[in-house]
Length: 401
Ligand SMILES: *[C@@H]1O[C@H](CO)[C@@H](O)[C@H](O)[C@H]1NC(C)=O
Ligand SMILES: *[C@@H]1O[C@H](CO)[C@@H](O)[C@H](O)[C@H]1NC(C)=O
Ligand SMILES: *[C@@H]1O[C@H](CO)[C@@H](O)[C@H](O)[C@H]1NC(C)=O
Ligand SMILES: *[C@@H]1O[C@H](CO)[C@@H](O)[C@H](O)[C@H]1NC(C)=O
Ligand SMILES: *[C@@H]1O[C@H](CO)[C@@H](O)[C@H](O)[C@H]1NC(C)=O
Image (cartoon, rainbow, N blue to C red; front, side):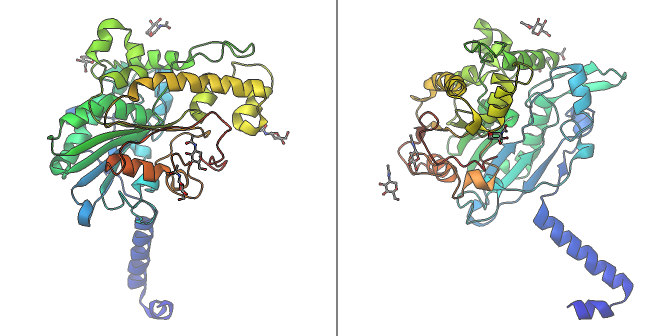
């Protein structure tokens, strides 16, 4: 082959090189598709560019099954923050590239036996408010900042409906981190799009954010409700109202209604909450955010749990207890599932190692992939697993993301 191509005249050699590059690219990543008619629909990223998604088509028995994953990436809660964000792929499609599909998005049958041949979609996050804002503001430089997460959600799902989602027999709405929160926010809307015969379910991954103060019981953490203030800024700046439960809004502050503990009360679709009760992002950014403590002891413990003192572990256990209290309401919900492990990790479906490997957390004898497959396909009577307090279980790999 090499010898033959060596004899080819230059134009053909170039063609071969281009073909090889195209093959390499299709192995490396799934191409970006930009939403059609984005500007006319007002469904745009922070900078006004069209939003996008990556779709890998299903085949065989998975042809009429759809897995939708909403990308995460925190929030922007001030003009300044959103202004910075629009210079990145989290605020503009100008910076978006092909992505690799791993874990639950993978088309490898051995790794992902339940979903490998489904239609799999990764929707890019470029609004900064969990696909839920609807408004605009003036940027510092005089241009417009577009807060159109809600329109992006609607327009992208509608486009996918036209590409086959409308005739799905099985469908899952998922997402991780801020995308996991988005899956909770849009779960009812997603579910309502299908008839009773369709098995439509929601799978928020690492989207269960707690309204917790950075630890007041411990002298050296400041006691601020960090998550609450990020959400308050986001909800007000980006005009997040439409997606919140009317019942909640009648009784409570909109910011409180943006928290999963409230959201789950009004969700009607079967939903499995996948989360670590020691969510590493929340521990690092909400429980012990930088600047909330003096000295080195917390920085060292935050980055490596093996360096925590027993007092610090107690603080983490306080976070876990609040977590377990907040999900209590889910325990009695029929068709719902829980997979709450005790690993210091954040997002477990989109990585091979946590999704399905020797190092995957195991609860009730099941890896994350097995538990979710059993819950979705109802192969088990129930999947509601909450792991014991750290460090009683040894299945947590230090290699987890
Ligand atoms: C806020 O969002 C609602 C619901 O999407 C919308 O009707 C309203 O016009 C928005 N307000 C502003 C100021 O954009
Ligand atoms: C929540 O955000 C609004 C709008 O930015 C602000 O007016 C209000 O003071 C905030 N609430 C708290 C308690 O910080
Ligand atoms: C954890 O402790 C070990 C041993 O004291 C030290 O070498 C390491 O740098 C610490 N890790 C962090 C992240 O501080
Ligand atoms: C702890 O790990 C084992 C596997 O080593 C697993 O079977 C068990 O379910 C886990 N703990 C709990 C509380 O489920
Ligand atoms: C877990 O699996 C092992 C081996 O596959 C089996 O021996 C054990 O009984 C199982 N435990 C539970 C709680 O299902």
